[in-house]
Length: 230
Picture 1 (spheres, helix red, strand yellow):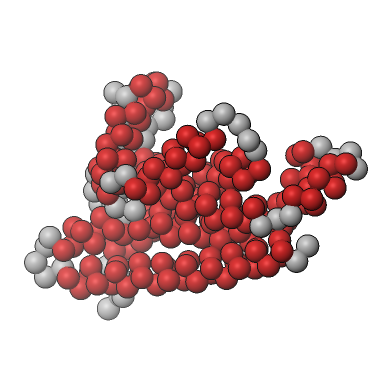
Picture 2: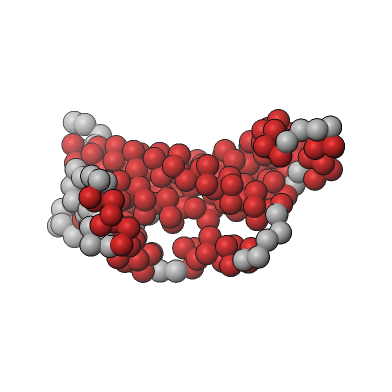
């Protein structure tokens, strides 16, 4: 007897796909925003910081509804994208978008803490030698914050794997298309006799979450130690 049924495997595979794309797509923006919040002073900095962290305190269903209004086929952005063949609502790509939005604050926070742990004098020393800002970041800052970047990516991946409210509101719960592990667990709990399927997916979720948190904590401590030791 197989450990997971075809429907369970489908949910796991889709969750991995959604979480991977959500993490990879948001990583460049996450690094940029984290660096801006850690190193730059500009009008609206506090507003940007607030917007970044709003998904942490806003009910996920509200976030999902906002995404549906904005990126739905009748939304201002979604309608324009639909005309060129890019559709998010009720597609796995929409699940990735919802997961990315919900995981973004954790990604930015982990990277920002790593950047703040790096001595600014190191960056200034490189700049006085004639290096451009981009070159300083690529050769000095980024190697030092890399453990923090990976830690943030792991947290974002785990958060994306566990996203439920925004996902089910924005893309529904369609088996094989938008049904991720959390929405599959929800569906199995509504069916008498399907508790075993739900339990198996719960175990997978717990293992992924604990592994991501432990790895993220270890990498975060390593990033702080590297920044403080230089």
